[in-house]
Amino acid sequence: MAYERARTHTHHIGAFAMKRLHLFTEVRAALANRDEPENIRILAVFYWRALLCIAAAIFVLCVIWGFMQLRQVLATIDTLSETAAQSKAPFNRKDIDDIAATLAKRQDRYMHTKAMPRAMPDPSR
Image (cartoon, rainbow, N blue to C red; front, side, top):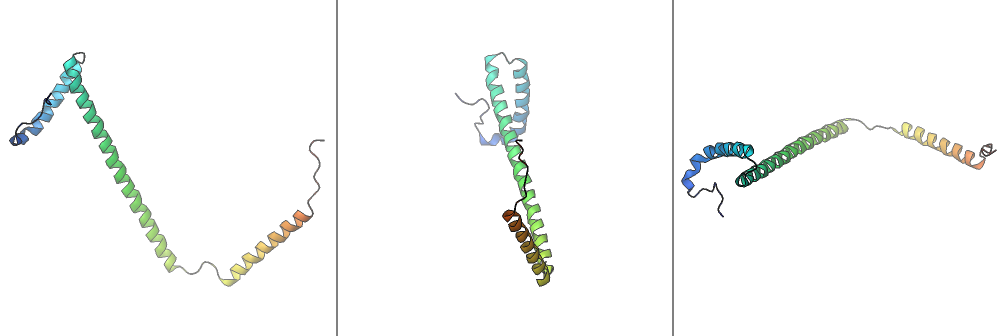
């Protein structure tokens, strides 16, 4: 069974827009008489093409959105690398020694608490 709207000659490309407009009039007529068996194929072809177009549009929009997000991340990385290259070291030797002393004090306090825990009342009584 040949497809109803198949082109037999290549020189009929000029009538492409007219055939597409004719498709919408066919679809309107098929929707008006959707109980007729010959209209089921027209509606099925239209629904399938509409689903394909919607899926293609969603895919294209997702690719465009992903590309924009990638460009934004790359711009952020470039900005951060430029500021990191221009900035000085975040710590000097004195700051590192202060941090090490603070960590040593915390460790001593933890070991002291671990060696002599506080007496807690028994909650079951």
